Image (cartoon, rainbow, N blue to C red; front, side, top):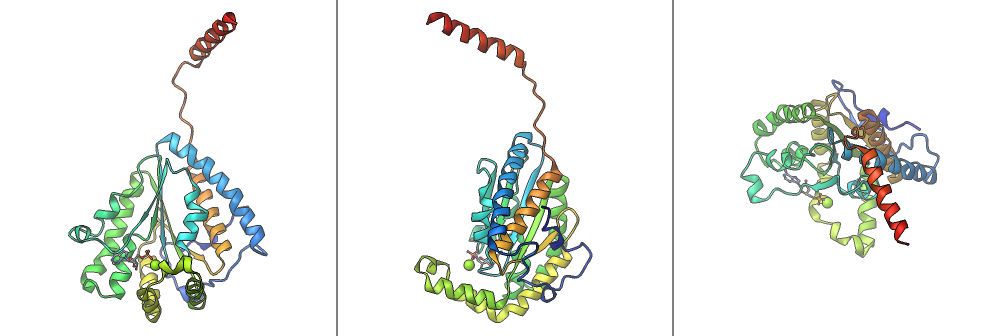
Length: 281
Ligand code: AMP
Ligand code: MG
């Protein structure tokens, strides 16, 4: 089954998040069918990623952005983190350190982009520098406003070097976020995830939405497209992203390299050793 692609935002179009329903469930009637699809698709992703790793010619960068509690961590746990860790790494981008702030905003990001054969998953990214930075007024407008163009050049540079880029915005409603904050409050295992800053950001929901719409609209290209993933249903979110990642890896079509060693010679050596061992019995 091929689906998920319908959530792409066409480059050049103006995204309006309020027009996109966050409760969509696509072709699935319920969670069981979606979870089955995700499990099968995860297996296909792993096989394709193995070929990507062996081929060593292309790379994949997955960028995750979302309001708090939209499910970046869950998506990594259930889909993206299931790839072979030898060729896949996740990078969380937090409030920049003093050293990071002493550099340009892409300094910490560029170091984490995937080399040939590798996959990088960004849990938050360079987009924070036109999102929280804008809404919280951390730098003047004239500084963050130039960053859209800088980001476009940066992503174009990565694409030219053989990196496919997929950017996912996990789209949840204000009501669903409140529900998830409540579940966190009720579950001591999740208390560490709660902070007053996240709660305060709810008051700025519209400002964040505007900032996201601007970032998605201005930094969206064929080589680095944005997908707005309906994420009120966790099982739909996982299935949709898994489907898109699988389809993208299929399109990249990584190939096993041609065999350069003389296999006949290796086989003859093996058979000779086997015969010697048999002779000693
Ligand atoms: P979390 O991902 O929930 O652990 O939280 C990380 C926090 O770091 C979020 O509130 C982000 O908005 C914040 N953050 C990430 N990157 C930046 C940045 N470049 N400038 C300021 N805050 C950031
Ligand atoms: Mg958080």
